[in-house]
Image (cartoon, rainbow, N blue to C red):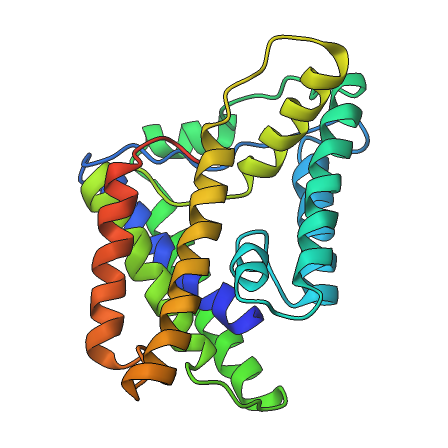
Length: 254
């Protein structure tokens, strides 16, 4: 999972940078989030730690566990239920702990940019070098498992999916916001309030349904037709489905 996550991130970052540089799409950087605990990044740091702990314990990210549940992976439903409970709990907690306003622009960064010293390209290059070195180290040092598709290849495919999404809809993929949507929907029902938008939740449900369909299709082709759908030509078809589906469902996920 770590290899896939790092590879996908390393592939996606240049896609977003090029899209922004060419003014083809506007993909904002993650802003600083603070709850007044330490500094203006305490929310980002805490969120990253919690996400890392969850991924380390389960071997799945917020999007992967949906596909695993659809495929019948052991304990995936328990992980998904935990994620939904986490979204519900977070919404309740966040209403009593609102985010504090932060500066949208760092004065030093603004000064450097004004003087023609934009460091974004160097930061991107540095991030790519660190990500690639980490991928190589993890691939060499971590225990090797048996899998039909190497995790690095899976990360590259995710990066290509991000590129296709930006190309056809000018927006990146992402599913994490759906868990917060579920939390908002739950508390609106409990309190009898007007129901919020469920667009991210619909995307989450659609992703689950698509994964479920492909799993049943794999079983059918193996049993009755004598071949596995996960051959290169079928992977190409799956990529076409993914890009077309993302274009049809053109809302923002994050």
